[in-house]
Every structure is written in structure tokens, then in C-alpha cells.
Image (cartoon, rainbow, N blue to C red):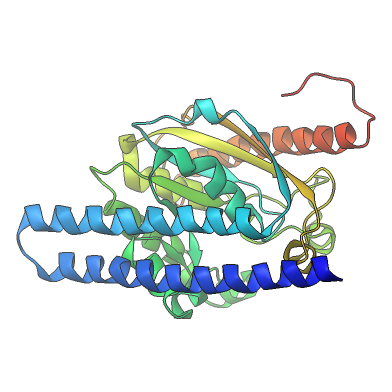
Length: 306
């Protein structure tokens, strides 16, 4: 009982710490973007960009620190040496738990560069966090439903255009841009509704990758493929707060940017098919890797680690 009370007190302290960090970093992030919009001097705009980048990384670092303070997680980080130190990369990852974000940030901490996320537009309205994400140029996606797009076909290209506009500001800057290709968090129910062919994943969406690569062109010099798994089970919020131990495994590999012809996902059927085939192949490999992690945890796998 005493141990549980100590853990709850630690959680409250950590929550207060993150609230303070959010205030002290998100406000400067927001101000940095406002200032670079209104100040006409290029050298000063570059200074404000660096200011936003610094506070963005500081928020990421403190988030990882807070995770270490309150959680009882055992990290298994594989392939971090493949993360380039001086190149802009597009990160593609599966999404199965709320803990995936701290997992990505943990793996990227040594780069000292804030990871940008493709963010659902409603997050823009979360106090401070939404404006902080806006301040460091995170692309905001509308994520229309299939039914809405069937009724409003003129909206099909909206997310692609938003992505192009958002990514255009990264020209000339080193950036790590994260896209959860499934568009939502995995659950068995969602997988069944989709009729997905994978055991541990939902169907990936190639459009976000295509739009980012088309917008940033040759600036994206590599793709970082993240596979995140929880071999002993995904952490629940209650278990996390109470200090229940769990294992988080993050496997990283750098892969080449795919050759997809014109790269015009919306208007070139050949490029669209190449993107989809590439993403689906990536997801099949990822599903097998996650299956191996679970079998190893159960003591039923004798193969080599990936």
C-alpha cells in the first residue's frame, strides 16, 4: 500500500513537472513562429526557427525524462546507429499504443532535433500543446472519413495539399518527420473491420508518405522504418501510473527512398500503385518482425534477432 502511494505521489509530481515544461516550451514555440512571420529580416527569421527547434527538442527531452521518472519500462532499442546525424528523414512507424510517442522520442533523443508529427487537426485546439505543435510546423491533417469523401469528392486532395504546404517550410532545414501510416491506433476490432491481412497491424495509408516525399523532394535522403512492439503486453495508463513493469522494443532501420516514377500520388496511377506496393511490402516485413518479438517473449522462437 505504501509503495502504491509513493508511486501515485511520484506520478503527481511528474504531471506537475510536465505541465510546467509544457508552459515553458510551447509558448516560446508559438512565439517563434509568430515572430518569423512578422519580421522581414531573413537572418532574424532563421534565429526564430532555431529558437522554435530548440524548445521543441527541449519538450521532447523532458517528455522522455518524465517517462523515466514515473514508469517501470525496460527499453530494448535496436538499430539506433542507423539514424543519420546530418540528414533529413521521414519516419514511418506502426501505432499500437499511447506509449508509441515516448518510444519514438526516446529512440531519437541523441539527435537533439525535435521530431515533427503528422497531427490530427483537433489537437490544434488542445491548450498550449496544439499551438506548440503549430509553432514548430507540424503538419495538421483533417482525416476525412470515407463516407464524407464520397459525398464531397472535391475534398480528396485536401490533406495532400496541406502536407505539401506544411513540408515546404522545412526546405533547407534538417528535420525528422514522423508519420503513423495506419492513421489510427491498432486494435483487433479495427483490424477485423478493415479486413487487414496483418496480425498486428492495420492497413497502411501511402498518401501521407507520398505527399511528404513529393513536397520535400531530395531533402528527404532516407526513410527511418520504426517497428514498435510490447512483447509482454501493451502498457495501460493505470499500469503505467502504478509502476507496472513492461518491455518496449523499438527496432530502427534506415532504408532508401523508393523509386516511384513521377511521385504524383493523386494524378499518376503508376506512381500511386508503386507507393502502395512499397508500403504494403514494408508492412508485411513489420508484421513478421512483431510476430517474432512476441514468440521470443513466449520462448517459442529460436531464430536470430533482426
